[in-house]
Length: 191
Length: 191
DNA sequence: TTTTATAATGAATAAATATTCACTTATCTT
DNA sequence: AAGATAAGTGAATATTTATTCATTATAAAA
Image 1 (tube, chains in turn blue, red, green, purple):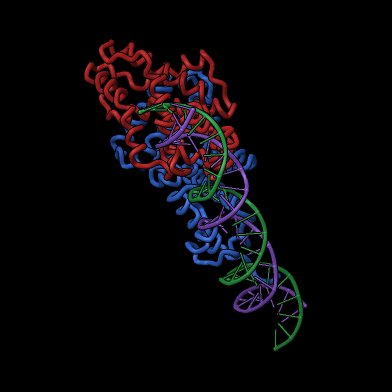
Image 2 (tube, rainbow over the protein chains, first blue to last red):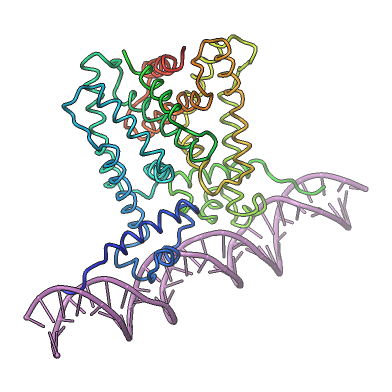
């Protein structure tokens, strides 16, 4: 009973926090600034989050699940390996490139000391379908019989790196480059 | 004339800072702790560094140059492409794996808002020989004629990713895995 | 409409911590 | 050996900032 929490305020806090963290890093993040940017009072932030650390953890989880949802769109384990591989690779790349700052945040904070073990594990679990897909590719002799973790590193690494280049404006990733990148990825792991 | 700065103290400060940043992140870094860990007085840190930000920037530069020096060891642009490529790839991977935390620090802070533009550029320049090597490989038709940045991303990305896995203890990178990783790298970019 | 539980506020509080500085110590020069 | 210059110290200061809390506003339930 009584008044309910406002989902819009929650989202406003998330957005404000992301923006500030990207601009100034975690150490530059002030709860007062978050509140100001979100258009609410300082104390209100503490109604939605226990403390600063909780806020960062929840933000991470929020962004990560939106992210996973986006690149897993239309994924269906029963489809042939190559279809799923191509689709997943492109979607992961495109989603990452479309919001490079969010990707950078997710990448950076996954290893930061701020994330709780629990949140880290939750994020880890979201990669499961990718592991399973590669296992399938190996079983069908389409992919080199190397450790799955190695293959994952080989596939995700270049995308992460490209996203960073792209975000820095050092190198623009267009359609053509994306196709070239996919070719590199596939040439790399195909058996 | 008069007393000179003590290089051992400088290094002690660097080491203390690195250790603390790795454990608690930049936001958890306290100048008092740095001094304590380095076995000197708080004020002394300010004789060696202007402020906290300067300390982080200088630390980055210090680690980066040691890092580059280590993996560039024995590099000689006049040797055949494949020799240099193999050597550089292995050295980069081994150096990174040998000190995964330092590598993580370098990777993470390269994109952080704390690094000054100048330091960032200096770091960027250190990659030049790698760019030149790949350009040579393309010119000799040994490597796919794709943008150099794309090839760099394809080569460095997986190593960075592997180092992270390795550091987390999620996946142990031994001799065999390293050979497999090299094979993936080469299969990927060879023309 | 009244009651009630909870959201929202933001000034005040409580810490935390970067930085300074008056003073001491060490080392170099003459 | 004396003087000069800069390193080294760490308690005191200044500042920044997370968090609290007394109070008010709001929406759901009775």
